[in-house]
Image (cartoon, rainbow, N blue to C red; front, side, top):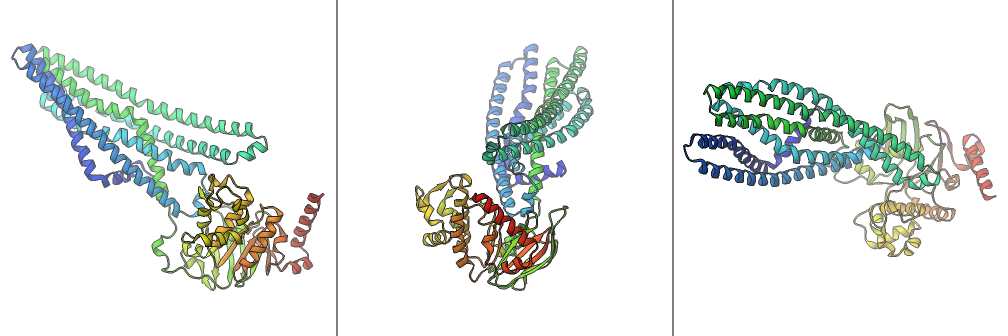
Length: 580
């Protein structure tokens, strides 16, 4: 995204606070007007003192009043600016979070958690800081430059030509430094996102890091990322740091030229000493704003880079809006059918190739196969986390692509490999499946999921507050709550992805009993590594390298031999070894 585009769009957000901006403009005009009046009054006071014409005390009192009014205007300016900045950042943060809720799953799969967190925290902070410290400076700089130029032309046109002689050089240096600095700040943000991602991975995976004694390796990997971040940050600061000294040098050169020319004019009585002093003050107000902006240039560039990344996220195509949803979510009953479905993640190799199968209504189909065979991908496609690159998926003869994703998901229950619990109570986490459910319905779902027994042993039972991500529960307990949440949603189609792979044998048996009654009358698709959990499946599909290699019941596949029987034999042998 072009910098000009990002600035224009950011300006559109600021313009939503027109009244406050108008008040800021008035207060800035007042503060800048007072600043512009000061050099003229100083010159007048000096001429009055030297010439002995009187009025020196009155001019000094006027000058004091001007400084006081300027200070009050500056205070009001800062107060109003804080309100505008916080409102703008509040709106951006809200829109960014809302848009991220509507983005497809693929958006999150292509980016690290650290990068996404950086966009919602660091980038917004950079925009906020840039607006707070640079917006008024920009406005007052324009007023100061225009006002100073007008007053200099009025006071002495010849000296004005001397003052503006260095402007082309100022512009050239600023443009050169800006072009280099912007790319370095973008790179710094990328490295910062990578550092955040490393921290997030290490914190969430702390048990794994400790268990495998990888603390030193984790520290070394983060050190490498941190060094790259330091290098990128150093380069950004070095390049941006060139701006201030360069502008100051050119400003001093400009001041020297004006002083020399003014002294020559004063020596020939073509200008008074007071006029030259006033002109020197205005020359400072003419070049000073440029220097001030230059000194804040790194902050401005960080804000622009942050805005570009924020708008990039806001411009990402969301899933179809809720306004396009059906008035009433359809009841997804009938046969689930995959017809010549193909799918691949991005530009990578195909994960599914011409997959075709049918799941009769009210039956259970199991998916088995080695890691990477495409089992979880089938579940993701049915839940419309992704859409197939070829072929069609239908339920009851209705193509899922013709329905809104939310309508499909509202009728499909899914338990994923990785359970996700949220901050809140056990009751609130189960009720996440259906927010209008009563306490009795929540408890009934927990009983069906075999979770009621352990919940009763918690300190506050259903009102026990969970640690972040359910950290005060075992992995199996978290999965049972996740299953209860799905049961409460009362879905038409049930998808279980490794639903019992992380619970102990006793809990697995209890869940199997509960799931048997739950699946009655529902179309169910189960992904499982433990083949003992799917013996009663109406149909078993054996996948290998994205294709269906075998299909049939457990008994049929065992008689037929092939990959299923081989998988079954390996699991049986592994269980025998573990028991000894």
